[in-house]
Image (cartoon, rainbow over all chains, first blue to last red; front, side):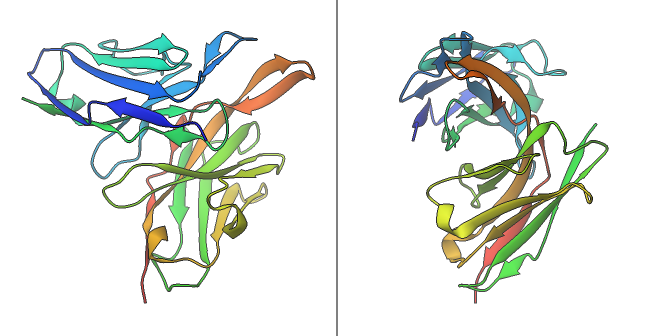
Amino acid sequence: DIVVTQSPDSLAVSLGERATVNCKSSQSLLYSSNNKNYLAWYQQKPGQPPKLLFYWASTRESGVPDRFSGSGSGTDFTLSISNLQAEDVAVYYCQQYYSRPFTFGPGTRVDIK
Amino acid sequence: QVQLQESGPGLEKPSETLALTCSVSSGSISGYYWSWIRQPPGKGLEWIGDIHYSGTTNYNPSLNSRVTISVDMSKNQISLRLNSVTAADTAVYFCARSPVTNYYNSGGEQIWPGAFDSWGQGTLVTVSS
């Protein structure tokens, strides 16, 4: 199985500042034939299902504010939230869909400082 | 906007079979992969398995021998059965949709699930005597 890790476990950021979440996979998620990274990011708020933010590592899902950005390739990926808003408080998960079983990172909790 | 709704008993006894249904509305099952994913209270997400709308299934080896996922196109439903449950199976169970994506290898064009773009609200199943 591909192991996906995230750092930090949690972080607190002041309103309007930037939050950065890191995701690392145990093997490359880049498929050479199509040059796509099989990595997604989700946001989960209490009592709600996860919500897709990015797929192919950096393609923003429709409706996701552009203060969110996804980047990275291969085994190292980053989710950045600029100008943090109160509604961004949530747990963020990365997930690989390169090979089954699909696996998620343990999550990173983002709070307001 | 497609809507997914999980349903089923909220309480199961140990050794029994958990059976859940995901009803899909405002959209079709055709053209997608459908997964079951679970989340123990206060913990992370675990992929259970998926089914292509054609009926092809794939399961997480950690649960493989206990899981069955099926699709009923006439009812627009996806079902999950998990046998011989224990307290460790207590979790919120989600159904989720993935688009079909394509890639190429030596065997030609292949299909593969994309990211989970739609999720149900989830249903809590507690395993307890």
